[in-house]
Image 1 (cartoon, helix red, strand yellow):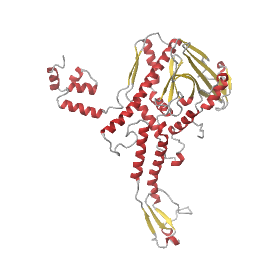
Image 2 (cartoon, helix red, strand yellow):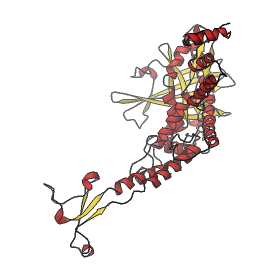
Image 3 (cartoon, one colour):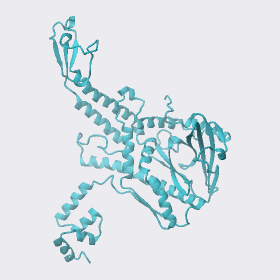
Image 4 (cartoon, one colour):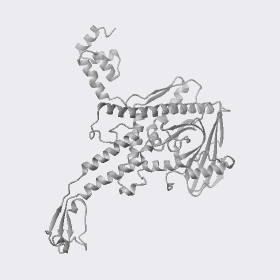
Length: 472
């Protein structure tokens, strides 16, 4: 595969890591196949796939659509809160900084395969650093959990490019987490330049960062990596995840090509009249008669005096029968296969009206999507708990808030699987049939208590409710 370093710069970051720590420069984090795969996924996400020229740059951008849809399904009814003490209130305030951007960040993580949530302290508050897996290198990992990684960020000020390379390492033996930073300055973005003392940094952003920090008495790394919970079929030994559309790359190619064919069917089949040159008018200021498109394409010239055209009339109408239904059905079938390979329900990308499906097929399709999204939610819940733990450890280390216990609650809902319209129709039918109380329906529909539900009923309904003993 031809390398396209437009999106992924891990090879450059590797060279920096080897330069900083040549004695420990090993190949345990050099997952070449994953790096190439991430380039492909990111190109698809950016709507610049390698096959874009083959389809005349007329792409559907389904990769971004799939990543966005998974992020939406994960977060559709998500609620989470930290409670229990003054420390919990402080953590909740910091936690909300991540929650505000979580859905957007998850979309990028779904596209590339994973994302690292790394908290850091700035002026007494804890901010989230969300880094997709194409922007850092895992150095060590145990049981699938990354325990050491190198991160990179760059800032431009004036004519100088400032680079910070941060290595974070967790030790299970010492129960400690180490953060080691190196700073560089260069006149070009592609060259790391010379290492400088942090005291000499001409940058407000990093001027107060301690280059070496050790946080003790922690039982896990102070960063949390979420990966798409699909098996890594690119490199099974890699701790990194795979894109939500990693199993549908070839199908995405076919979909874009089919879309191009579909559009060309309309363009190539536009109504036209082939007429002799003598019936066409010369355009002012032009030497030729030209061949415009769409409605201006109506008349097309041909030489009526040519030998091949002697038996033709001075004009002929070009009006072929369009085959748009065939192309549309073919595209729809490709989309359905993409949905299957990506664990999405039928109708997410395809037209649900085009293919007859039994109730069992619909249920199985929704169940497949529900299972995939449920796995993502459960894995994300564990990662968010790790992120909150890291925030709490940093609050201890920096004395940011009084000590105290905290509890975290999560509510993901069932929005992926349930059909609320159908459920409402069933409940209303039960009410009308007399097998369900009206107040029970109101409590379910509006989330109110018994008293509020009774007050929502008409006067006769309220009296009936209390006559039945509902108010006791």
